Image (cartoon, rainbow, N blue to C red; front, top):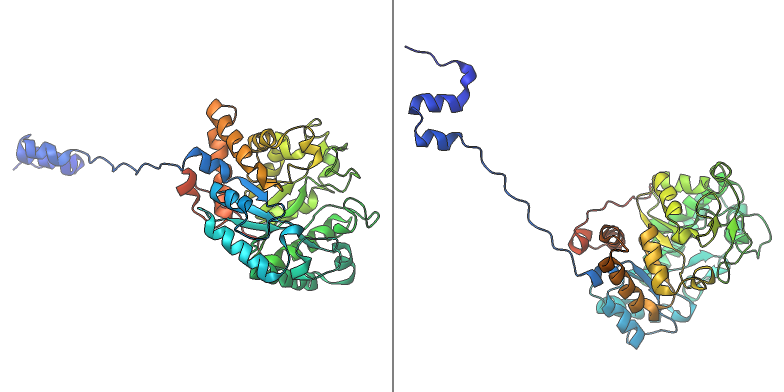
Length: 380
């Protein structure tokens, strides 16, 4: 009897047994892999709107025409400022009504640093400046204090706080940064900033560390004018950048960039629209949502109108574009759409930004832009 060598394998055995029959050839044919289901992104205008976080000037009720317009647009988030806040019941109703009117999950943000920048003071109550907190309390006590702020913010529907500062400053209390900074010492600024961040997070509110790459070296008020930080990266790394590196290493989910220019990066461009500033942030290991300070501030708005500023920011690397004037939202959305359609803004960049903001808001980034993202989580 003839023996078939084992090396022929199952397919060869079938050929020998069947003498090359059609049945044998069918058995040996490889099976085609099933094709992956196609992903269709949301319409381009929806993806463009998703990167916008806008204010609602003068709005106190969700039935206000501006609130209805912005909600219907499908912006990624809203920003509550002092005129939006009367009392807890009113803000809760405003937030709930806005969310009900929006076609997408919405980030509801505010600016509650404690001290002189405390947008929701009428609800949260007054508190010491960050400088006083660091001088008078331990990091554990500051974390507990911030958890109380977070609990009161969460109760009215706020889920993103544009705090804390990681800027370095020990100059006059009323300076541009001043007592809003925990310390001029990078290690202390990082320690207390992370304690404040963890306190917010423990209450269900996402913290935002700011103002990258560090605003403490300048006494220019970017609300009204631009300014330049003349320092090398070798000078910035162990000082201004060090607290941000600590926060990134700890899993900070959101970083806000400032409107100063840096000679070590793009000397003629504010960090919020500087590709090199965003590249530096990503080189430091950041994988979360990069957010601009408000593009309505003078350092930006005196050079570029809201629509162009939005396109420049996203093109440079921003994921979320903050504008405190929601009346500009339609123009900004339309400019982003036009930039993608013309090729001035890569669609992949917009999709990445929209996916990150959507994920932060608790939505499905793949359903929006067919892009998978994994945001960092701040470790305790």
